[in-house]
Amino acid sequence: GDQVEQSPSALSLHEGTDSALRCNFTTTMRSVQWFRQNSRGSLISLFYLASGTKENGRLKSAFDSKERRYSTLHIRDAQLEDSGTYFCAAEAGGGSGNKLIFGTGTLLSVKP
Amino acid sequence: GGIITQTPKFLIGQEGQKLTLKCQQNFNHDTMYWYRQDSGKGLRLIYYSITENDLQKGDLSEGYDASREKKSSFSLTVTSAQKNEMAVFLCASSIQGWEQYFGPGTRLTVL
Image 1 (cartoon, chains in turn blue, brown):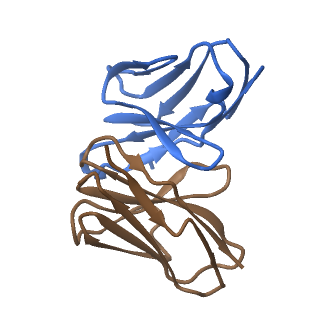
Image 2 (image 1 turned 90 degrees about the horizontal axis):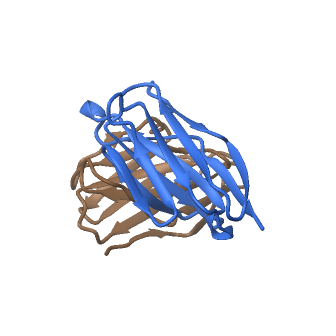
């Protein structure tokens, strides 16, 4: 079936540094959503993209508008509160009924 | 803004027991979803519903039933809890085809 491959699976950053997470899709996707899950398990929506890029503070996400087969999440000037598990999830559209397919997550740890 | 509430927050059951989880949303969204998350893994879709009284199977529907009693509520039943099962069940809602918003989850432990 349709798959979402997320990388890296774990990432350790020092405060103030930049990095990027990536999700590849085995088929063309209609939209992508990025989430952060905190230590209590709450899933917070960061971005929803049907194309192009979106930016919110130190976070920026892009969804490849041509092939629609990958998305990235950039973290600029990482802070301690950015720590958590990040998930991407994509929707194939068509007859999929708005079903999201989740990646396996990136465990981000930001250190002083 | 709106909110999604899930009850209970923690659910402890016995092997073979039938267990029901509830979800309410006040976004007035058409579509509601139930996902399961195992420790260290991504979410997998169990059931979803695009309108009141509608029910669609996800990838993980075996062993579960669901019911969309009204637009604002969607319940999930574990038909026979499996021994040593531990997972978090997450409810979400959306306008069909758009961004999904998630509840805080119900943590299930089966003894």
